[in-house]
Image 1 (cartoon, rainbow, N blue to C red):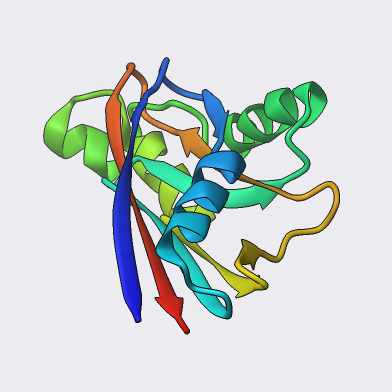
Image 2 (image 1 turned 135 degrees about the vertical axis):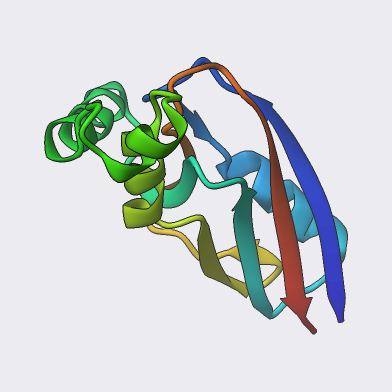
Length: 138
């Protein structure tokens, strides 16, 4: 059995993190699937999905780390081609990854006590995002 829904998000630009855990859990519950997997996928090339302890310190630390490792710069080939200021955004999102797959048991995503599913905006401007959530199993 497969069930698919979308989550719509409005972001504030680079570094904006949003907790998707409750929304994903609700979609899993509504699917009726008790055992299986849920895939959470960001549609677009400048944002990512992952897990983290969703607390204010890490919400600050992760984007700052990404901006230190892959800072805004006009030196990226993407900048030299498009001049749109977001070459680092593409690299950060690619490094982090656009999706996450989580096992389901007893109709709930299996996550640790301090593990939440997040969306991270890597682009330089606010964006309207669509997240595809696909639940599959039995």
